[in-house]
Image (cartoon, rainbow, N blue to C red; front, side, top):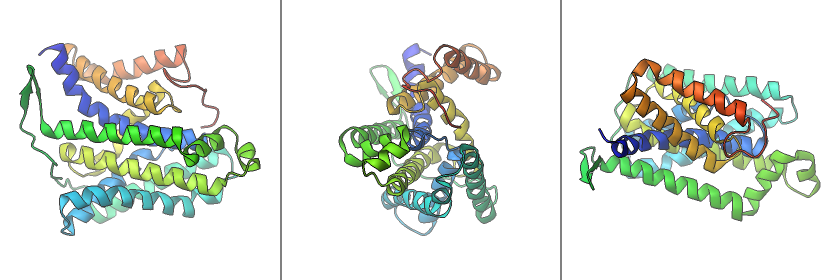
Amino acid sequence: MTVIQLLVNSLTLGAIYALVALGLVLVFKSSDLVNFGAGDWVLAGAYIALALLTAGLPLYLVLILAPLGGALMGLVIDRAVFRRIMSASPWTFVVASLAVGGLLRELAVLRYQSNHFPFPPVLSRDPVEVLGVRITPQNLWVLGATVVVVIALLLFFRYTTYGRALEAVAQNRVGAQIVGINLSRALMVTWALAGAVSAVAAVLIAPSTDVSPEIGLLLVKGFVAAALGGLDSLEGAVMGGVAVAAIETFTQVYLNQAAVDVVVYGLLLVVMWVRPAGLLGRRVVRRV
C-alpha cells in the first residue's frame, strides 16, 4: 500500500477526531475550561440521531435535526448545570462535566442497553479509484462535511460579534463584563455550538461504528488531537485530528496494532515537553 493511499485512508478518521477535538476547543476557547465529558456529548448526539431515524424520519432530515437537537441539549445542560456553577472553582467544573457526561451515557444505556444499532451511510461505501487512489463516496462526504463545519466556525469566531465576544470571555471574564458582554448569553452560545458539533461528529462516525456506548470513547483521541494542535486553536484541532489518525494508520501498517497507542501518547508527551500550548496553541492551559 502506497504512502498516499495510507494518508487518504487516515483522512476520514482524522476528520472525526478533529470534530471531537473541535467540541473541546470550542469550550476552552470560550470559557478557558476543559469539558471532560465531551465524548459522551458525541454519544448523546448519536442516540439523538438514532431516535429520529427510528421515529421514521428520512435520513436527510435526521442530518439536519440531529445537530439542532445537540444544540438544544447544550442549552439545557448549560441552563441546568453549568450556569449554576459559573462562579465556582475550576475543580467544580471538572466534576460537573464528568457527571454530565456520565449521566448522558447512562441514560443512553438505560434506554438502549449496550446494543449496537446500524446507521445508514449518506453515500455509497463502495470504493472508487481516483488517480490511482481508492476512496469511498461516504468518506468524501465525511471530509466535505468536516471542512464545512471548520470553515463555519472560523468565520464565526473571526467575523461575528458573538465569536469575538466568546474569545474575550475566555481571556478575561471580568474585563468582558465591564465592556458590556453578557457572560451568561455568551456561554450559552458556547454550549449550543459544542452540542451541535458533537452531534455532527456522531452522525458522521455512526455509519462506520454503529450507534453504541463505545462511541463515547472517541473523547480520548479527540483530547489527544486537541492537546496536540492546541486547546485554543480551531485549526490546531483539525491538524491534531489528522495527525493522530495518520500516526495510528502508519503505526498499524509498519509496526503493529499493539504499538499504536504507545506511539500516539508518546508523541503527545514530546509535544507537551517542547510546546505545552500545543503546536498551534497561543496560550498555556491555566485552568483544568
